[in-house]
Image 1: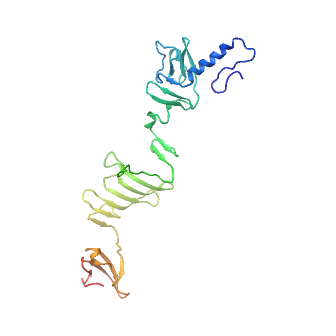
Image 2: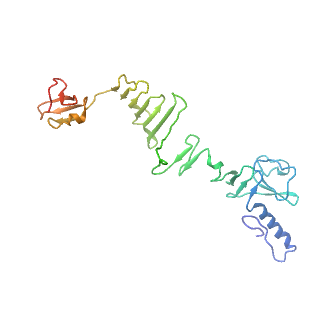
Image 3: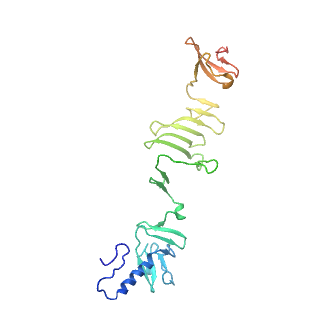
Length: 278
């Protein structure tokens, strides 16, 4: 083997004449690609008046002396351009943008940790991001914490008819969704199959109406279906002053009868007869 495996540096061979020529060629190559810093990575054509040692990354569609050398390192040495194909993993400092860039095997990209890499179009953490899910995370949990005070998670939509929600899935099939889904009503809806969703809880911002099981509440609390309240034995009802007026329960009189009672703030009374209960 007459050249090194990685940097293609020519070896000195036994009984070789003019060994200094081979040695100088190796040094010239090292001088071009070690501690790589390029003047620009966006020029497709060589500059008019380069200085010895100037280095560039040839941009796409190279022209003139750089034709056919796209992506390669162009180094001006001894009055001529020398070209060095990069290998995956090589990094360079772009003096024009003050950014660290790296060669990924097919092109030069912003290196991790550089300012340009700080604003990526997609980001996958142990997962593959795509054009829709531009941030993808696969882990047992995800933590968002405060930095000295509170913390808000904001989900913003463009217009009223768009969606800003959190979708809960089972094996990638939707089972529950909460948020603003197609309107500005706050909605919790559920689905048995990921296709058909039914309203579980809806809060309407205009009038403050809350619906349970209905898309269109017509009262402050609108329940589409029967309502079940708690039951207790006579004498074991909660303290009425602690519960407060307006509370409802069923009272069981030892199996003889069951009736609906309400709290007036002082005592429990039967809804039908208004007699004291207890």
